[in-house]
Image 1 (cartoon, rainbow, N blue to C red):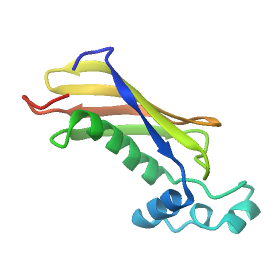
Image 2 (cartoon, one colour):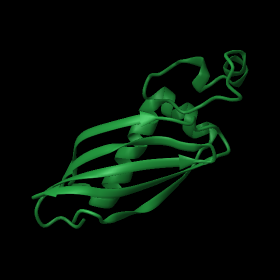
Image 3 (cartoon, rainbow, N blue to C red):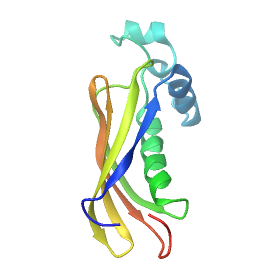
Length: 131
């Protein structure tokens, strides 16, 4: 693991099932995450993904790369363009800093509308783990 190293992209199809199940799993019952008609009444063209699901997908992206022994120390993300059903999000990352077994990774998740999520994840990888 070294600064400047790029992580492989992760492509995630954005389905209604992913949006609704992520909202339910994170106990976010806001209607804009499961009811298209009520989302439209609030000005959204469709239901959209909540930040907790996005946060989980960012965590998955990092641990898919660094392995199951990796520990997420800090996840600092910001949402941009909504993730709507039928779109695809592509997560990409670049290691920006390394200090021993700890790395900071800049992460971007893009969809058809632009950047859905941007942020930085601090991850610690135990010595001898594949990264």
